[in-house]
Length: 313
Image 1 (cartoon, rainbow, N blue to C red):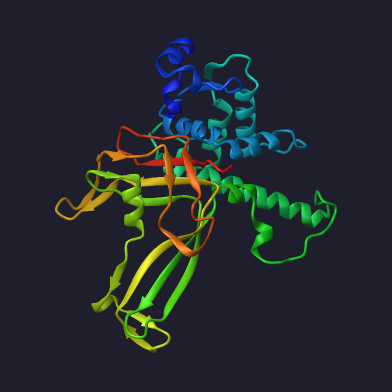
Image 2: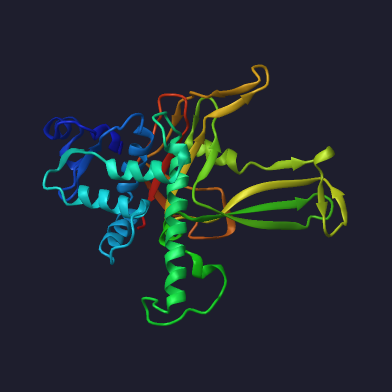
């Protein structure tokens, strides 16, 4: 569902064109006022609003004891303003959120167009850092919500609901072609960035993401078993699938003949449902199916994220 086509439009006209079944009774569809090239921000905020697990956590944060103003408090105020509207369709100015964003990061403190993917990463990481800091303060004050002091059991205590919703795990597998030994290294991610080609699809892009790469010549792999550099094969697999899968299409490519990056305006076909086939052998729930929730498309010179929602909740 392309939620961005609903901005500033008439409800009855939209329902007639798209169909009333696309408009759940309890949902709200509000466009966000553009404060000078803030469409990169507005489109991502709308995509996140329609990611229900994320929206529910942000709204729940709103009802907690009032904290000092932050990007998260401004976001919770904005989401609450949309969710509590009596009308089904309308327009809301995200002025408070934009002002806070420009205050916290000079990259966005201007009226120039910015990259939606960079903004998504900044927002999610900023919220996660804020939640981790609040949890740290609660520990120091001995005021954990469950009334007990958590033991230090590694990184699990540092996970936030941002990680619970968006974080997945990649495993980088390298197989020595001499002794057949396989080594692997895990890496967490909040979104996946995939290369694009002409006449392609999201599924094809994801398969390309996990293509096997041969390491040879000056790029040989140092094998711990052989204790020497050997030819090897390397591939990336998804070990842990996230609840919400955010895909970013890498639409910039360095062209040697031009000595600069150029945008790839290739058409990329995307399905309404998606299953990842490039999972590792030990992946949990590898058959998980995702439903498309939002597509952010920038028609200028920037790239785009594609958030997808897990249909299994």
